[in-house]
Every structure is written in structure tokens, then in C-alpha cells.
Amino acid sequence: MDAHSAADAPLRIGPHTFHSRLLVGTGKYPSVEVMRSAHEASGTELVTVAIRRIHLDDPSGKTLIDYIDRTRYAILPNTAGCTTAKDAVLTAQLAREALGTDLIKLEVIGDPETLYPDTAETLVAAKELVADGFTVLPYIADDPTACKKLEALGCAAVMPLAAPIGSGLGVCNPYSIAIIKERSGVPVIVDAGVGTASDAAIAMELGVDAVLMNTGIAAARDPVAMARAMRLGVEAGRLAFLAGRMPKRLYASASSPVTGLIGSAGA
Image (cartoon, rainbow, N blue to C red):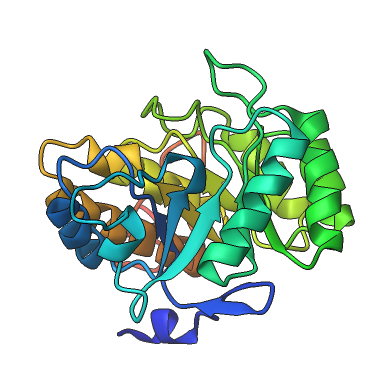
């Protein structure tokens, strides 16, 4: 590990600390074996699971949770599929009881076609969950005002979307994401819409603290290879942000200045 990487502080979300800045989902993989191999290739330490979508009728008697090595990965249960604050709070409470974690990714969907979050219901649910002792990571639109309100309520992070869930469009509005990060006192985790490694790098170069993705890995032709690519993209983007990019210029600037060279004055 080089000096810049070694100097980077770990990712802290409430009382939890992680060294990987890539959060990975568990849906849409062709098999649980591919999912497990992709998780390993990604280097993630935190995987998210949709509590309402865990199938309890597996012939083996196992659920998706049984295929996740909890000695290696922390579980981030999410409230995907909820459309009201009431449902989201109940789902979070069930997840805490079943999994023994205070972490919750809060999702309250307002539009079934775009899967955009319902901001008003998200705020209501966040307030109640924070009061109930949860470490809340809310999925929200790339709206600086909504993110500040969620932070003020006590959320441990904010998770603005890069693009609609599962779209693979990448960071559609980098300016909003940059404003959210500039104004935030909690980690900013870009969630939804990342389709390939360059998208992950672009997000991290904006200065965000982490990226969460699922479909971009699971729906790739080779999910395991894409998981490794996403890992490298996140690491490269983070290192580039820490290094500080050169300023943009409208005109060319010579890579090898001629000032001081013999004959440069026209002799």
C-alpha cells in the first residue's frame, strides 16, 4: 500500500468502522455461489440485504443470510419494497430482531416506475428510527436540502442516488453530489445507478465517502470480474481525490517549460 492509501482514514458510519469504501448488494446474481465469489472479489466489508425479499421457502431450509459469511461481512439490512414510513419502521425493527444489528438502510419508495424515494415519508421514518437507536443510512434523491434535513435528524450517513436504481447511467448530476458532500457533516455514500468501474471512480473523485452498488456487479456478463473492477475503480477514485487533480485550463500548457533553456530568448 502506498503512502497516500495508508494515510487515508477508515470509513466511519456511526459506531461502525470499515476500511473498504465499496458496499455491495445481494440481489440479481445468477447463483449464490457467484454472489459469494463477487463479494470476495469486491473487497467489501458491508453487504446489504432486502429483508422483505428474503425467501423463507428454500428446500434446504436456508435463507440468503445463511450464504453470507458474517465473520467477514457486516450485514446492512434494507427496507426495499416499503412505500410508507410505517412499513419501513416495522421492517427495520424486524431486521434488528432477526439479525442483531442496529444498521439499517432506509428506503421508502414513492414511485414504482422510477423507484425514486418518497422524501416526506423517508424523513418521517428516519426520525422515528434514529429515536429508536438505529444507525440510519437513508436512500434519498440527489437533493442537498433533503440530505441536510436527514443529517439534522441524526442519520449516520446520507445516500443520494447517482441515477435511478438499476439504470447503470452513472452519476447523472455530479454538481448536486458535490454540493451534498461539501455541506455534509456525515459520510456521503452514492447509491444506485453505478454501471461500471469508471462510474465508481467518478463518484469517488467527487469526494464522496463510499459507493453502494448491486446491479452494476450482479448483472454484468462476468459478475466476479466486474466486482474486482468496481473495487479498483473505487480505490482509484478515492486516491485521485486525495491526491488532488490539476486545475482545468481552457488553453494548452506545455508539459516541458522552455523558460531558462539556452536560446529560449531568441539568441
